[in-house]
Image 1 (cartoon, rainbow, N blue to C red):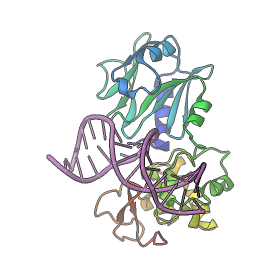
Image 2: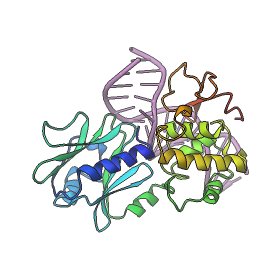
Image 3: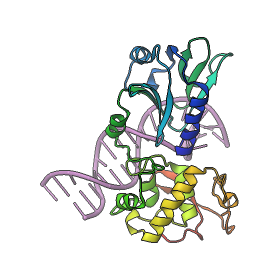
Image 4: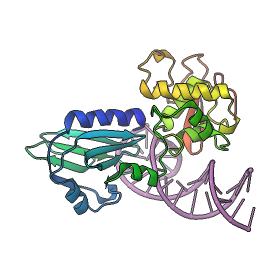
Length: 260
DNA sequence: CGACAAGCCTGGTAGC
DNA sequence: TGCTACCAGGCTTGTC
């Protein structure tokens, strides 16, 4: 699940439960989740340190330890965090941070598609992975956005999910953004008009800030409509389900008819 | 049992 | 021809 708004919730969760507690021991319960470290080296990097802040960039969560050192977490499709003080680790816990004086933070991942690692230079870490600007970065302008999409042969849906163009959007939210913008997911990015780009940019900001239809348009969100037989919340037309660059895409063939 | 699932990465190649 | 950007496939395991 974790896309930008979900990772933002995990960031808040980390800050609410796990800050300023010395890490006594790090337990890696499945080595496959580690990205660039052995269990020993990760444990050595974390031992005695305290999480001081959670920082999010796109779908990455950095647990800042001071001096730019960070625990890096990526959640894949099925990752999460769970803080617990008794009763043992939750199901699918892959890495545990055991704090001095009790309490543990578990990184969970059902399918082991995420990653846990360590860096002493988060900016470099992101650059190495070609991660673009965070979709909610105040410094990201409409001009930047339009420039990044110009000339792209790929569909707009695929471009929105491309983390090197804008970081944080996955399958669910790309569908929502395009639904709100009334743009067909298969339309080529380079063929979008200025008005459509404006609409997509504004909706991207609104939706990622105010996720899950919690805002004003609650009745007109695609959210929760991902099942066969679902209808457009605006006009009642049965939603179309197509595959766009390997991902299942829901859209309204009437509201988003401009097209591929 | 096979198909599928909200993540990313890789390899081969279409297209400029 | 060469380089980029794009897509399909793979990873993994639980669910329908």
